[in-house]
Length: 321
Ligand code: HEM
Ligand SMILES: CC(C)=CCC/C(C)=C/CC/C(C)=C/COP(=O)(O)OP(=O)(O)O
Image 1 (cartoon, protein in one colour):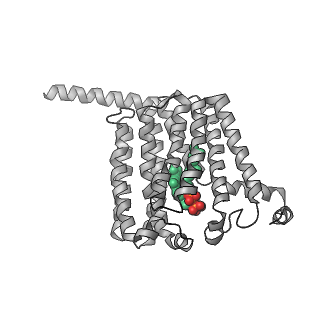
Image 2 (cartoon, rainbow, N blue to C red):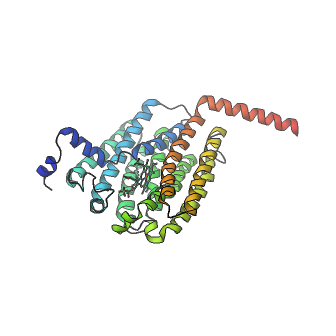
Image 3 (tube, rainbow, N blue to C red):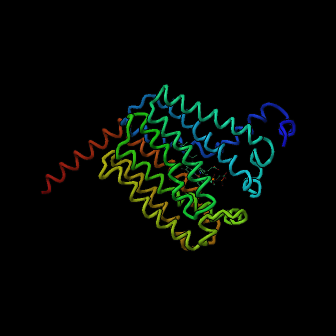
């Protein structure tokens, strides 16, 4: 595909912008930013600096967009073969891989500069490590070679929580690592539910995703086990870490029980694609609402409410005993 041919596939400049925008897989980025923002909220105990929040979310967007663009360049061969991905800008010939590479380098450089000049060096290096890990460990090494690809590769998608925490505090606490672990453990149910739906696509290009290698029954059982771990783990932020209170706990329990019900339903009927689709969609809603619960819990009004309930509770216990 020559430059002229690629240019001819666009009728106007707006379409060129649209193609570059699509390279960044933009639908995934908002949830990555929501996890970043939730980490920032907890780290600042609800007293977040809005300028810092905007800068961090902008830097995170640039880093994630760069990572996804690099992934589109590397995976152009399989993206061309799979029906789901064939219309992406590179396999469809709308963007030349060389131009996409320049775009990705610009995005990564802007992200690093923004983080290091206006936020801090730790967040700059963490965002950069997210790009490197996603490209080298997940896309290059694991995706085409191991059925555990997204278990280990999921660490890349969990890095935005560390970026958010580091942006506020300049270091990484136990709570930051707990948030990282939460997204890390959530990734297998999230992705394998989708993989159950599009198993044939991945089989066609010899990508060893879990349902392709071990089948639907084993995958649905592993989804169940990860969900069974992630739900109680979401409460670690309340006890023993003490970073969040009872409002978050109630939200996490409600969301978690629904997550478990859906994962169980997939385990019972691993070949039912509608059940897998429902779990996949819910996994996204779960993470979105869990992070919202974290933010709500850190609002000053929630802190007052929690203090009130706990003092009443202590009073009641002292009356009884
Ligand atoms: C290695 C880890 C992960 C893998 C392999 C993975 C894979 C995928 C794939 C293949 C899709 C479908 C995309 C498409 O149709 O173009 C998807 C959708 C999605 N992913 Fe993940 N994902 C991972 C981690 C994450 C993380 C950490 C987040 C955010 C916290 C996330 C958020 C989303 C969202 C929001 C969608 C739905 C996009 C839409 O509306 O179409 N994913 N994921
Ligand atoms: C801090 C930082 C920059 C972190 C980067 C995190 C990041 C980009 C996570 C994305 C995870 C994801 C949606 C993978 C898609 O898998 P895939 O590429 O195998 O999907 P496909 O089959 O649709 O191509």
